[in-house]
Length: 164
Image 1 (cartoon, rainbow, N blue to C red):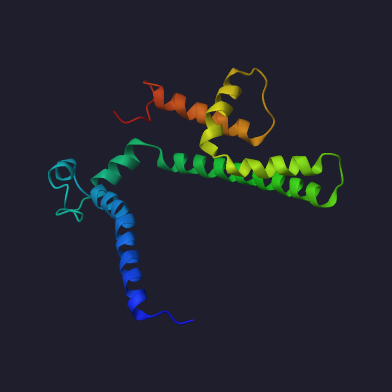
Image 2: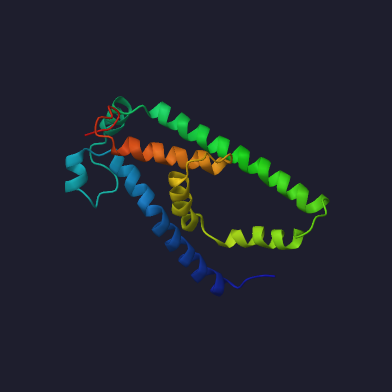
């Protein structure tokens, strides 16, 4: 099926404008990261810095343990992904090959949770974990513990890794 040029050109223009609007904040942030603090406040409309500098990156890598932060993030994300894959494979196997009472209801409940956003369940999970005395043996317990640890790290005024 061929699309007429008279119809395609306006759509291409709309898509190009949308892409520019979506990419602007990324380009702005990247350009601002190469500006000094004075340039960032005085030349806000200049996307490309007049005098690019690596001072912000040098300060970042000297004041924070960037490698440790990156590795912690990678480890937490990897462990959560592995546990999610393992539990998903086991659940899929059970739903496909095993016959048990309440299978359809349980499957309906599992599929229904797809429509609940994570942000809706994040805080109740955190509160439930925080006030319970027992340690949960599933992967979201580790995620809640890591979130609690990171929130305490951010609040701790004596933390040497925080930039003042």
